[in-house]
Image 1 (cartoon, one colour):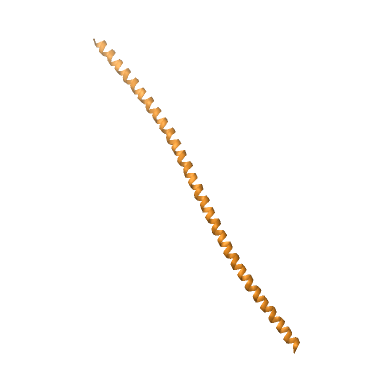
Image 2: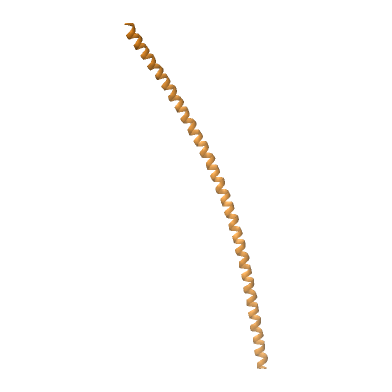
Amino acid sequence: MVEDVLSTVRKTEDEAERIISEAKAKAADILKKSEVEARRVAEELEKEGRKIADEMIEKARAEGEKEASRIVEEEEKKARALERSSEKRLEEAVNLIVDAVLNVGGD
């Protein structure tokens, strides 16, 4: 009778150890699957973040190019205006020199 009880206890312990082992194996499998899924999600988020960053960089580059183009255009307008002003002053200076020469030579 005692042997039957001990045998039953051993069987119960063995069954408990088997159940615990199976539970650990299932938990490890679930954990592994979760890690794989987490890694996949992280990679997807990283790709999406990289895509968004690239789009933002491209947009900033385009805006920068527009702004640079606008600044160059404004500076070219200023340069043309200065050139016209310089040409007028040069023309006035030439006229003054010619007038001075004519006045000196005409006296």
